[in-house]
Length: 462
Image 1: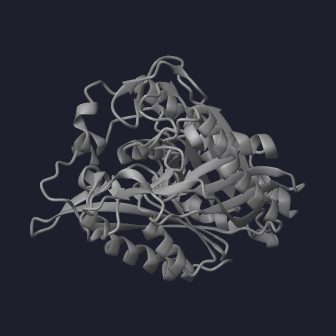
Image 2 (image 1 turned 180 degrees about the vertical axis):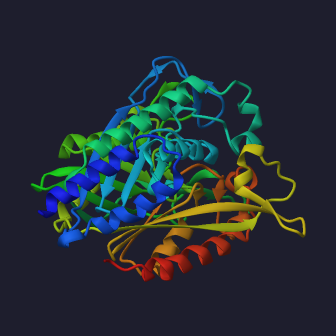
């Protein structure tokens, strides 16, 4: 029996099997365990495959925009998308979705993940939904914690029709990405860009406010993953960089993917391959053209300059990425960080899975952390928060993996997660939009670093 036909038969059968809701749980679980073993029958070697799909989700009517105060769109500046990458090492299929919207409630992620599991048999651990964090895109789903922090802006009904469209387009995209899987290679590298700046301006009285702080800490690394077709031509780029989507300010009423979309479109024009923009720890990082309006440049001109400030730096990193491989193994993992919740804070009932009350009556926030390891070199971890960059920088420095990337705004939004020191200066991120206490930095670091140094290293390439 030839190896490739065996693999093709197993994969096609697996995909067809999981394309229909099946209630026979025991049979399903048995087959899930059996398929990986069958892949190695007769010495068959699993082949790495990948695909990329881009789906337009731009609405055709005015929508309420998320970011800043409540406002309704009056037109379209540029179109917004789901960009989906599928990875398949022969055992694990992993789906990464980057969407041009601001934030979603974790309950919205759970809803879509549940549909994918029921309809396609995709384990939620293998589905990450990241948001680029543009402040000029429509709301999707229920507000989540923003309704607690900024209730005055949510006096309107949830747009269920647009939410259903976004959900359906995502599911259709994943089905298409699974169908398009083809032999591929993967490579990884670093880049550098000074397109961001710390936005926690500190006054003489030590009080923080939204502004520009050139002395504040930043994260200017670009974490780049490139996926090539089997012939060596580029299939997709995944660029990880921390920056707020706030080049267009609160006066803008046109739908836009902001700086993240401008950069992704530019890189695609230059390479011919779609680029997923994956935001990082941007909780205290703004684009360098953002907070104050230049008297000499229009916002349109400022947005265009990021093609050089960030887009060209991604292209430079891509040119330096010369080593790729088709020998890929994927490993996923998860943990939950429990940390004290801010006192006297209301909590939406539909986010009940993300809080817990101890026997002593102490309210905790339950923060889900996801992990993806690619071979022995790449470790990616993600959170549904707006993280301060100092925290991800420290975790990266202490990680045992040479390429450690943090994916922010992933699988929901549970507020800003500042450093312990940030509470000394107060400000918007600490006083208005965070459900945490100063203990959260220590609790998070201990859990994530422990997982990277423990569980993630203990899983070895087969």
